[in-house]
Image (cartoon, rainbow, N blue to C red; front, side, top):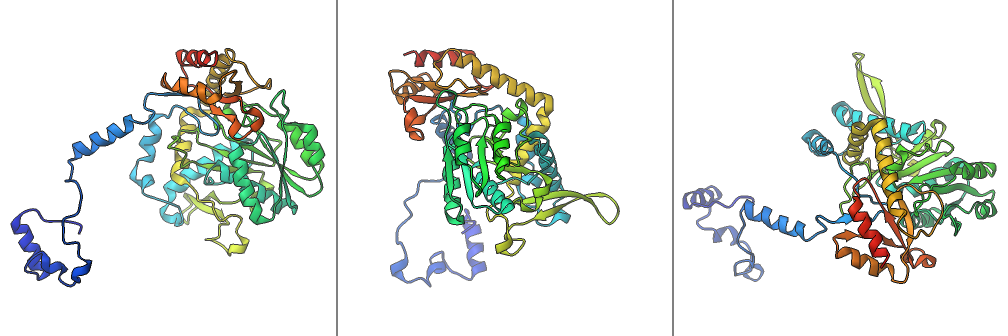
Length: 438
């Protein structure tokens, strides 16, 4: 019942309207054995003040006021207030997808700007209207490479985010795409190019490389691309830390770029929702999953936006669809669009420089596992104590520590992946260094 009248006059008016003499008459059609016969065991209703107070108390039980040095694909960055101001507008918050372009011009225009800025940021010629997240964008890029090359084997770096690799393997298993891995160098943490060269063959459709990789190390993308192209394979470039694109050279040698935009004003939110992206060269545009928003003109010659390319199963025959999971994530992608607009080219570079400086300040106080160049993440040797013990010590100081790597890399069971961003303060970083020093 949507509304229960409170006064006797209101109750009587409702019963008269229904043609019933009492409230019991409303349920007289139900047999006695299915009726409860007692009041529901529910607490009395609460006022708005009490409800707000309850949720504030629950929020205080979470990591409120804690510093975080946990990265591994989800990063703690400052979110400009303007992002929430824009995405909370009803015209954006209540709309889902621009399937009717004539009444979706606002959403289509923001997606068009999103695509344009991502193409500039990645050095590609075209970007799609966002994927579900970074993990699903990886297998979508792999399947795209298989369609382009007509080959049926994927080579993925072992330094690719392990959860991305797990999603890739799940996809590939039912697509008939065997996935093989090539290693990383134990000294630097970067790609083992010798191992890559040995594993490349004439059936390899794509070589998948992440940079900065899961260990935070910056890869030699140009060399990996040359090796892949010599064998007729495509180079798929993956990123999980989008802020790095503000400082590092765009991966122009890649054929496909896929990644995660969580760093662009999308809150961690216990792991989602996020927004992935795929960008590529124009010659591969027909194989890109998802949708593309283009700029056109209406019958009066005014600027208008439309879905230029939509190759999802809901638009075309299922067997011809390039993807069955490419939700356009318009609202989440809008957060990233506002973020990029607020920071601009120079602002994003300065943000990346802050991340770089703070990470290197902290790393300078710790025993590093790898010698390769890094951005804002790096692997640290925990020493005599297990990584979990170090993290427990940090929690007592209201600091969330790094990711123990033994979960994904048994050979690194004594190591921790740490991340420092612009949100990291000097005194907090010093406390982290003290915890690792024992």
